[in-house]
Length: 206
Ligand SMILES: NC(=O)c1ccc[n+]([C@@H]2O[C@H](COP(=O)([O-])OP(=O)(O)OC[C@H]3O[C@@H](n4cnc5c(N)ncnc54)[C@H](O)[C@@H]3O)[C@@H](O)[C@H]2O)c1
Image (cartoon, rainbow, N blue to C red; front, top):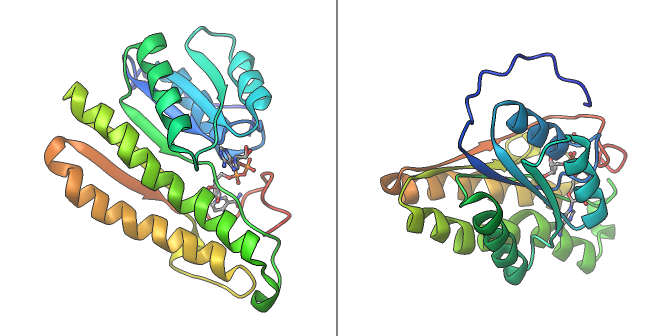
């Protein structure tokens, strides 16, 4: 995922995006951030792996990309990252809730409580906090916005062995539709993307 062949059309010129989970050059978040920058956006990459997020940002060789450590499960981290977006780039127009996790594919009765709670927290609670912090900022700016939640094909076509991962992504897709209906009047679009399988860091666990 480290090369792009599409031409830049400047479609995101003047926009500021927060992309979560972009620490790995093999991951979706990195490719999304790179494409956004090519299209003219300013991007903050937030990831639990702060040094990975920073090296992703510096690999783009532009002042329009910044990386920062954040735990998407924590409200205070969302607040800090939004404050950074306002201070560094003037606001937030786009949010990509891409950070996610899974446990290793296995019989569902063997999934531990910790694994269940982590998958629900990283994949679902992250969106709960992002709404409370980022949507408020978008409403304050009064210019609408776009939120993209990275769900999974497992949200609609679940298979054995990853039951609670799939269920967490079902919640992501379901919440996306209700959020779109709720914040549409504020011109804040909310969409989900449901990928199948790609050779990222999570691939081996799937
Ligand atoms: N790879 C696939 O086949 C596939 C398929 C469907 C959906 N997805 C989804 O795509 C998204 C991106 O995953 P990926 O496949 O690029 O893997 P990845 O491992 O490269 O990306 C996940 C990133 O999320 C970060 N992260 C995990 N917990 C975090 C937290 N609490 N706070 C902040 N960051 C955290 C990780 O450090 C990692 O950089 C995930 O939501 C995943 O569920 C992936």
